[in-house]
Image 1 (tube, rainbow, N blue to C red):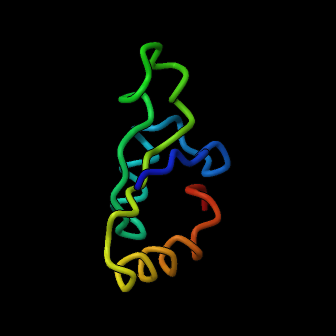
Image 2: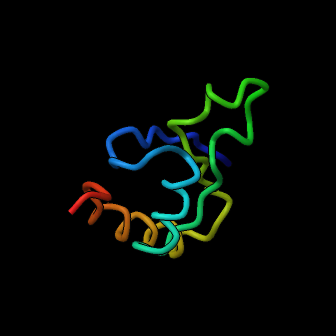
Length: 73
């Protein structure tokens, strides 16, 4: 139901910034990766996405995420 996604190419400072960016820009919720590691630094370049949703919602999230290339203008 979950996926840890690499956010290193988004051009943000880390997982918390990426989660905030994904929520405010395309409107897709995620959880900072540092929440899931004993050594938080191991999850600093990841966010967790949940797939326990209806297909229509997953398709919309994918559509929104496809438009993102970078947090930098």
